[in-house]
Image (tube, rainbow, N blue to C red; front, side, top):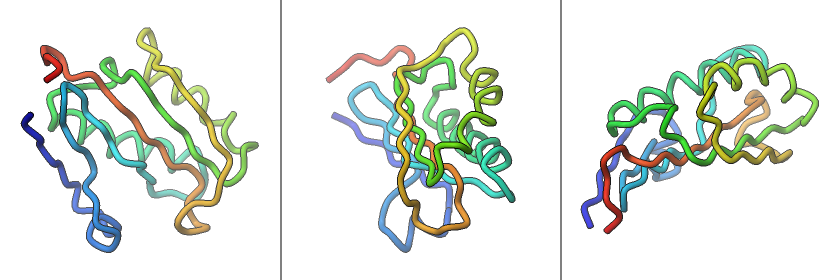
Length: 124
């Protein structure tokens, strides 16, 4: 099986020892991604942009996402993000989970992790 690793150059990638995404077995596994901004909504938009770039580099898009996990330190900050998420996934909603938990730094209000099926891939 061929494995492709995709880096976004984020500071935590080097510090922690991971890459933004890994393409393996017909799937794109995008690491938990935080974004920039003052609140969960701004960070949600920013994280989705970073994820979209990783998916594109792998040859996929949000339409190919089959699983998404949202992690927030305060579940009450999730609902304001719903319109952004509905717009992003639209007619192709993935299976989803929301977890309330601590994140790597208190300034982060949302972290998003996705798995996408790589179009045209055959599982190996």
